[in-house]
Length: 80
Image 1 (spheres, rainbow, N blue to C red):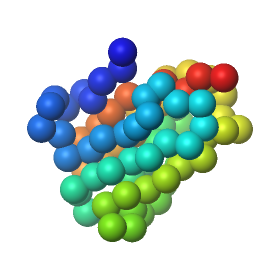
Image 2 (image 1 turned 180 degrees about the horizontal axis):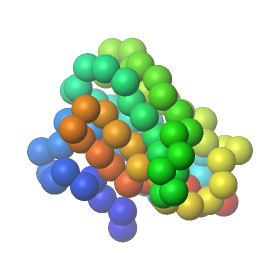
Image 3 (image 1 turned 180 degrees about the vertical axis):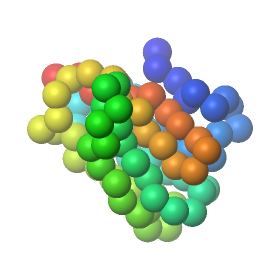
């Protein structure tokens, strides 16, 4: 199980986790949501609408990704 790094009262959630394609990100933070590879490469940067952002990861490689919003972060597992 991959869980949110910042704890149960997180202002950031990403689901389904693991995902095979469409990832839903919900945050109470304002500002940009960023997704990084485990090597630190910025792969996505965008602004949520109404605290929700949907990311199509279908063409992304299987692996572990870091989602960041403000001071909150979550690890997401992408499967084939």
